[in-house]
Image (cartoon, rainbow over all chains, first blue to last red; front, top):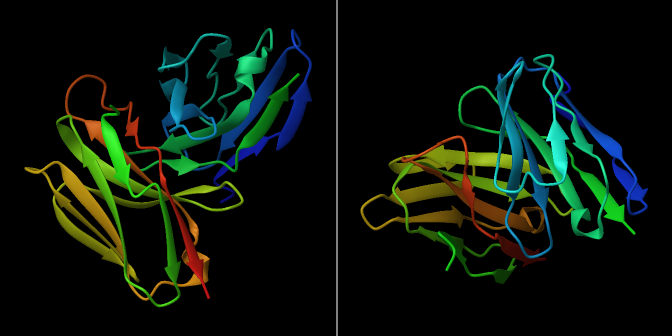
Length: 110
Length: 111
């Protein structure tokens, strides 16, 4: 199993550009999560999903959108990138409560 | 004040030392998680516990629900243990899929 994979690993965006961070898991987990991690801060939950077709907001959803059309994929969309969205983004999945994390995407918005 | 506090923030040890990292929380919980974040950024779950003690190799995690406190111990520390150790709690009220995260303890083990 590849576990949780994320693409891209790194990305630089200009202010106002859009992009999609991809997340795929091959463990047939129902639950999937998107977090952001800023220097010196704990992980912040952006969005999560309890299964295909069901998503819900976390602590910091503004500026982001998600969809969950399949069990495997949970893409995160940034529509109008802002410098405040410079961060490291982690996708995770779980079947019970233990979460499995992807390697992260380092995003810089300038 | 964060609902999950870790101490110390930073820790430097010599190889072979016994290490303790602490996590205190202020909410009622159904479980507590310990995770390790490698220098390259990857995050791995170490333990999930709701009572007592768990052991895996040189790592031991304990929790005291009444005192709202957990400790992560590393015996015979090694430079490869250098990482950030993160505590997170699962509240027993509200949406328990939303973990509350500590800020992490950065551990450096010198040879």
